[in-house]
Length: 481
Image (cartoon, rainbow, N blue to C red; front, side, top):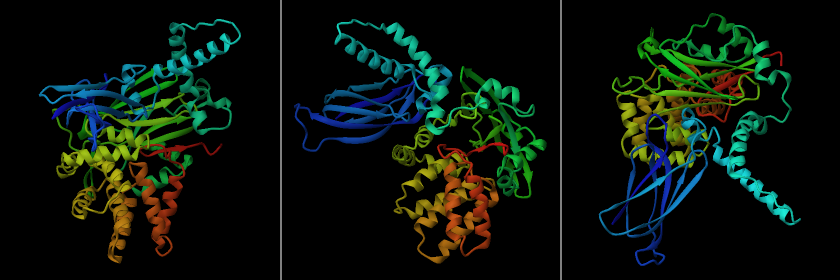
């Protein structure tokens, strides 16, 4: 057997992604150079970063290895493998990020690379030259000019991307970041972290039900303790890197025991606000020997009403899964989940209460591609997920599973109970949780008055979420609009 050592060389991530990128290994020739009757084929997950590799044992022959990045970019290599003891390295090198601090965002596809624009401009230049030659006119555009233009075009892309994707109307006067700074309320910050009481989850539904309710709540809200953040800027891009620097400061005593405070990140959007339910604490009992996980909040076009906001978690184990979820590539996310499950990662996240939020991300992927073939495993996972008094997503996943697999009325009753418990714990951390909760409550709303009331409350919030996200982000425009 031969051996392929595959990895994605991605610099400046800060930490290597153990399960970063999905790759296909396909045999196209055997050792004799012929097409094999039963070609070797395997889907694997390779690491992304500066070190590490995924080893794949293969029969001698020629192989095509294809890496499908979360950004949508597909990279491929062809490699011959002989029947000896030497490992054959296969290293993919994606285009560099515009800045080192945008490496995670580039891998996820949230920001474009200058190389993409260079290729775009080269194509345009080629067409111009071809058209000119047909009229006996020579036009040459140098690579230097193309590279310079690519950098400026990337900046332009950032400014207009949100309008192209989600807004058909022309920008108004309030869409200019400088003008927004001049007209916004003095008390509204570009970015702030606020705390919400974890023992009164139902209050969040009304707090985030309207801009007026949010404004009233904001008057007496306190800063979230134990977190620090830094801001980085690149013209129309702003990135906040949030780190949970002192975990113990975010734990408070309640009637339900010691619970972590909910962390709400608030950002101006025109004369309204974006509110993100940050996935904190990402590690419930952080390892003192490891660097705390960083959560990145990327904002396009400053405080403009047209800019896009995205949230990424720099998790070395499940960061790849989150990136694929962010780009709605459920198939690739499921591949990462399958590999993580084989290594026992999901069980370890739950068994020692190390990271239930990461386990919930895996749970939503599992629900999306549910195969009811391992009820014992699901029973174990759901029992562990639902034990956290501060985590609505655990009960949502439990209810979603029961609604898909129920074999009796008692299981349906259990699903309804889980939905009501989830509602009582507050707004889910994940967009998928809001959607499953809304759909689940609707299915019982005709016969259960309490479920109907909860459904209406959830729907009011669900209408304000940005569905193209992993984590729950609400846009609360001013009622004046």
